[in-house]
Image (cartoon, rainbow, N blue to C red):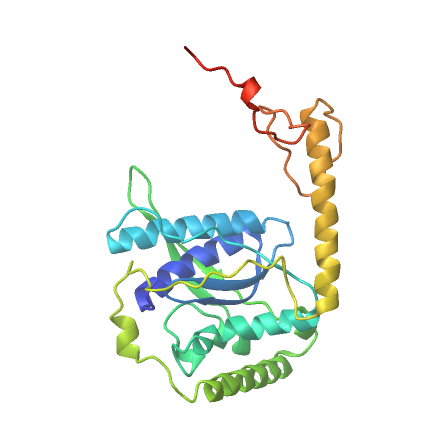
Length: 279
């Protein structure tokens, strides 16, 4: 997803279309060359459908644009629940200035990839086009508005006051990031000359956190709830596969398949006397 006007418009049309279809509130987004971040809320509980459609269309259309086939994303997307207003603001600042954090550009508002930095300040919508292809007939082009919602803790402010506050917060974060990097950033021409599909020499993969917070107490409480939920699911799953079709599962969980019955005893290797050797 090398940053360019063409890729930006293509990705913008995808995100805006499915934002409208699934009623998603987007607070911040940033698309870099090989990954993206979005801060969203799904009032209808359909964030998985939104991400599934966005990722599928990006993979198909960027592959077609580059004339390539095969796997596009390195791994499945993950989502993290944000546990407090302080964490929500931190996530907003992190995503909005992600290009600067990674040393790609000193001014995130000038990043050529799709991003919400300027929209978060102005509060304006941006219109993108989405092209629908079918087996017969001409492609159908529709226009969709990409809307960046204010953070809930800022929603009650006037537009002017909110704009001043967000601008100040973002500028403070950018200044700190530039200072931390001693003003050293990638050259714009180097970014544009990257070859799509190249594999990095080294890849750092960290464990995916269960939630997003900087508060250790909130994190511990969340993990404990998560463990309890997993335990409840495991118990319900075993009863369900043993024939109890009325068992209750935790909310928003999927029932397991019925083609395999649960293992009721621990796995044990066969002993020599259990083995039958064919003559």
